[in-house]
Image (cartoon, rainbow, N blue to C red; front, side, top):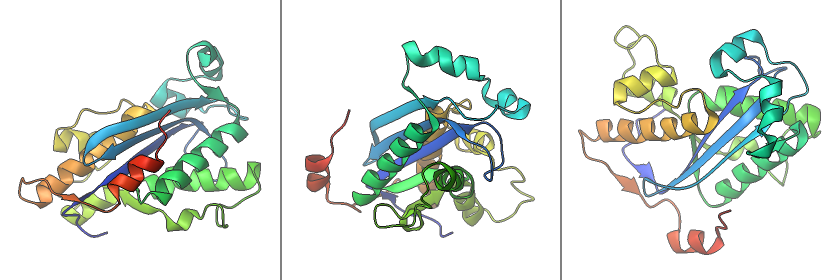
Length: 219
């Protein structure tokens, strides 16, 4: 990955919490999205999913959620089944991609989006490579890969998980909450760009702002 010297006008932070760590067989139990325009928070969406498989002990130690916890959120939060959760995530990604957004996250391509793709194949019967939505066309910025472009030495920075990057760049960690981690990843990226510009932030007008505002419907 290249070193970014500009922050794109429209960014969509994306993160999930899951039943486990295998993209081959696990499911997302929460999705977090946050949109930033000109570096300013604009919109967010956070919802939960009751999975069709158990939550592993390892995953529970990370996010602290059980299936009973997810069921109990129905009175105060948006809670979906697996199919509806996938469908909404795909719609959000598709809509923001059509507006020129860059998707930002930590290990977002290899983990969150790959799990989305494989879950979509098994649940919805689509590999997300069709005319409605082609996942491979997303503009992806992975803050871990970007950090390797900034500092290639693993000796100088041996650990680059999102929590470590937050500490390094002075960003408040997301706390293994899907929306919190999505926001943290975007803010890490913006600090990385400032670092690349020797302390001076820079924005890129990558989308038509007037057209974007006219078409965007925030709920």
